[in-house]
Length: 366
Image 1 (cartoon, rainbow, N blue to C red):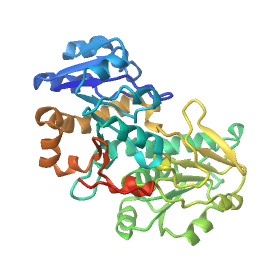
Image 2: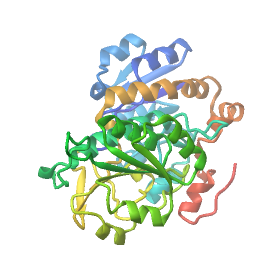
Image 3: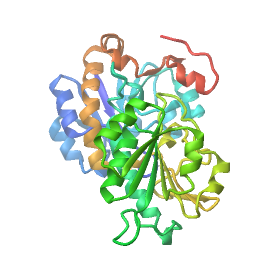
């Protein structure tokens, strides 16, 4: 199979879909790999690194799309790429369709095979291709939240860890999944007081077992959320509904109950956000303020640490890329049920029901 790795063109996205190590494995399996010139530079991988691994370097993104059977990316295609995607071409990347009707319609029209990293699902319900980026985003959420709590950037002026004689900052984490646990771990490490909410008691018991005493758990409901937003300095939105739009756990009217300078980091922004006032931002302009509350809603947070993120991502995507390349998408998805759940749109048909539900369309189930 011919596998193409284009340069990411989303704002401030420095990750790349494959490392030279990934290219090496594909070439070893007798596949051809085309990499767009400069695609890996943001992550610290250069053209000569890919050439040594066996890739052919192409000058333009158009050439990569035109000459490849499968495209391996990081982020969803943006408008400039829609016309480049060919009928029957496999596109393997993060899509997050439920948050973008325009993208969904464009991929339906392309008649391509859209396999989404974020919906590949193991038997135990875990999401192996989303997990490493959720780990990065969860940890980064605290770094960014701590920074935007500083007064010069309109935060409350609170040091998360406090100092002797001064109480530490308070962090509220919505969701005890991968993002929430990693955020809680980082916040606890800084010495902050952490409250983590979830509706899954099994997860809360797990958090209770592994976290230090200054991380406390509570059941998530509107009453508890309204209670805690009044006293916490940093709020992390880490809620995920697989393949579906995130629920609005914090509504616009709740912002007036928060203290001026409270910071919200909505990691769920890729799936529409779990805060009503969330709208996607970029690393270039990461924050905005609504009712004196600072919102940080960067849709590709791991893109700020591209070396770590690219290596972590390729570690988990490569086995699936090899399966797709070795046997074709139909056989690979039939033999590997986890990969099969990654099928979102197939030759113009939506086959992942949560996407259709997000737009109130009828799905065509595979």
